[in-house]
Image 1: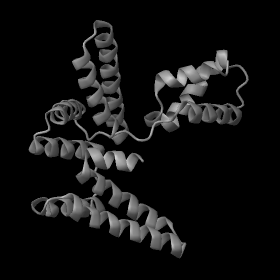
Image 2: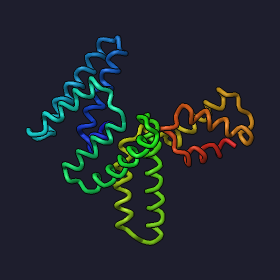
Image 3: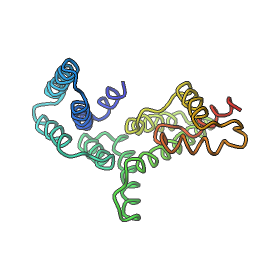
Image 4: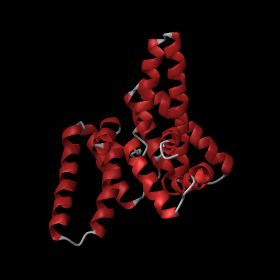
Length: 219
């Protein structure tokens, strides 16, 4: 479902990420049936590119696919490619939000004088989403329907670049498991230890506000 959503927003990048996932899984499989199924899926994705893209853009799409196979594109590169695609397609809202987001990430990269890890870029995207959500809250109280619609669209665009986020139910299960693994008995005093353990392993998939809400149910 996440892949389909991402394909709808950014088809070129979808093929890049699909190729990376394909080869990673292929190397890990030893079951011939699974390998055959994966090969068929991969061929179908290439065929889809010929259906989706106009003739003039097919070379670009397939080049992106091959680039994804041989070069592990970072989220920074993916964000840049998405912005350039939106710019060329003259998609105003996508161009504006992705251009702004890419400028923020690039600025931090320059300030730190190093390439950013995907986790760092994800945290910046999540921070921007939170800012947009706060803007929606203010716009709702002011009855600014156009602003609400615009920020909602921008949030959907940015969310396509995030890994799947845990639902409340999934997060509660994870909390329960982590409490048992760490042997925690008093979350009033050991709350910080629990949060540290969860964020250490799943920081890019956890919404901080939702995490605190779920933890409250265990206290």
